Image 1: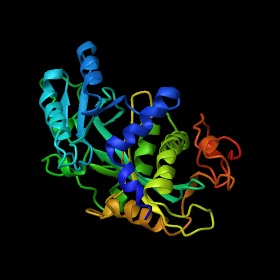
Image 2: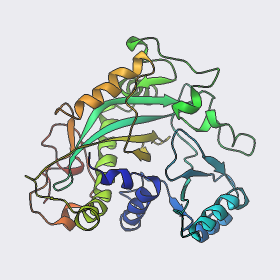
Image 3: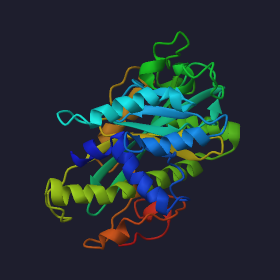
Image 4: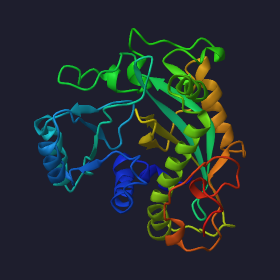
Length: 340
């Protein structure tokens, strides 16, 4: 594996990379919700929450959390003050690592299907950092909440099965609907991405090709935002050969992507250890195939080769894109040929 991803896929490190690019290229990185890293950005968060609009909501996540554990929704500073103080106290303890959280503006208006909020777990195989090369597997899992969605308010902030799509949270619900075999992917609380994109097209008129293209732009920009820190890691912290013909590994990454009401994909988080187990028939076709794609060119290249030896700074510069995924000759972010 490319072990640097284990560090930089954590929520706080990912936020550091994306925030830096968002400051420089806000239009390109608008797929990333505004994010604060606690305890370091506590003062800025307090100002934002004090001046926020009446219906603004914030979601607090432990940086290394998983399966929905430790997540809270908040609308007022007093709701997160205890968490912030806990993180600040840990920062003063030199014998232990600092407890970190990320706080994001909650996406209040997600796209809904059958009145339910959902997101998608998508899979990318990164086979090289220099040059940056990655493949997006064009299948995945859509994970549905089990309680009909309503805009956050004081009465429903603690309704995890309405706001959190995590399988670990919703499988405990009495309303959880397992898919009945591979042919049952059009119903249930866990569906294939192909089926979900088709349902989106039927309900909202956006084609699967257009959605995949937007997803490809999001993923390419995310990886290129991480690239400078990844190169820095392998040059200074854990030196290793970066020559294109040197020894190589690969990294399978799970991306959690939500579609908002404007039909735009929004990145929620990355996972360097995505689960590939199949708990029901409908999930085996995507998760197992994603694992197979890690060892074969079974997917389209979403960040194509850069010219070997090209400038790191120019190669890592995100740009707006177009179609994205069609063929391995597609340019960075779906434009023309890749720039060195």
